[in-house]
Structures are given as structure tokens and as C-alpha cells.
Length: 83
Image (cartoon, rainbow, N blue to C red; front, side, top):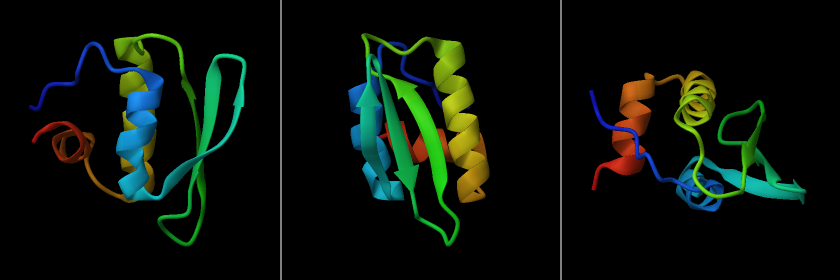
């Protein structure tokens, strides 16, 4: 199983998600709201923009994105973080 980075910030994650059609629509306090129209329906997620994202929070975000894209979470992690 691919490794999830432990020190990923919200802004770094937002940059990585651009290839899946996610754009930051607003930022309120220390959270960013992203929307993707990669498929016909849109998908909205909120990610923290302060420091490193906690592993459980990142795991939950990635699970939600993988479900929207119709891929496994492991495949999404490989595509995002392996170079």
C-alpha cells in the first residue's frame, strides 16, 4: 500500500487536486472550500489550510475524493504522491 505523506499542508493538497478539476472557491478562516466538476456532478470538500493536515483528516478527505472519482483510495494515493 502506498504511503500517505505525514507533512502535507492544505495548500499543497489543493495544488495536487487541480488535475482532478478541483478549484478553491473560497477560504474562510483556516479552511478552504474546493469544488470539482471532473464528472457531471460536482463534488465539494473542505480542507484545513493551516500547517500539516492530520493523518486521520487527510485519510477522510482522500477517501471522499476516491469515492467521487470511482477509484480505490490506494490508486488515488499512488497517482497523487508517487513520482
